[in-house]
Amino acid sequence: MSEPRRPNLDGLTEAARTAAAGAREPPPVHLWHPAFCGDIDMRIAADGTWYYLGSPIGRLPLVKLFASILRRDPERYVLVTPVERVGIAVEDAPFVAVEMAVAGEAPSRTLSFRTNVDDWTVAGPDHPLRFEAGASDGLKPYVHVRAGLWARVSRALFYDLVAMGETRAVDGVDMFGVASGGSFFAMAPAHEIGGAD
Image (cartoon, rainbow, N blue to C red; front, side):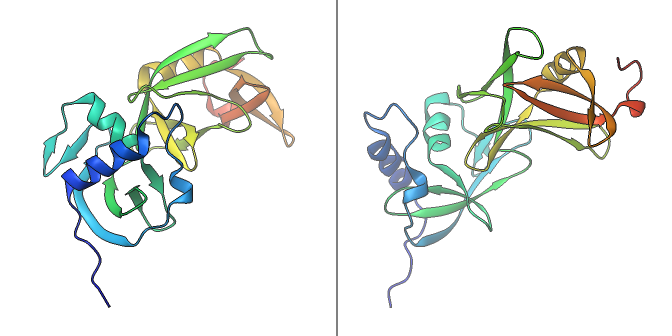
């Protein structure tokens, strides 16, 4: 029985370029199931910076290429091509939402988010917002980008979400949250939010 190939950044980069060549959409990573080749010394920090061998990857096109082949498997985050699958470390969420576009007014408002790798997603039933209690920094907001991959919404954009917030009854409880794409995303019970309408 042959051993799995050892992860190699150059080979991974070339395979990713081949897989993404000419594609307008992200590569179909959900269809690829090559053997697991082990972990590679790559990490996505909580602020969205990608590191390889402890140094930041400074070339945005390369980061975007790797982001296009990122997948969330049940046990780990992986970079996957048709020929290899390698594990990487993710400190929080793999992406950061750095820009928001608002169209319309509640209740028909839509909120679109641009990530640090220039993907756009519209918050709604298929791309929900979620809000988690942080250990020391209050609520941490996230938006679903694709296939189990989330973007943490930047603190500045979170303040914009709070400014658009409203109170609605959810299962008989008044909840403070924000509407987008025909859905209401609760942040917290209204009584916990000072000054909520």
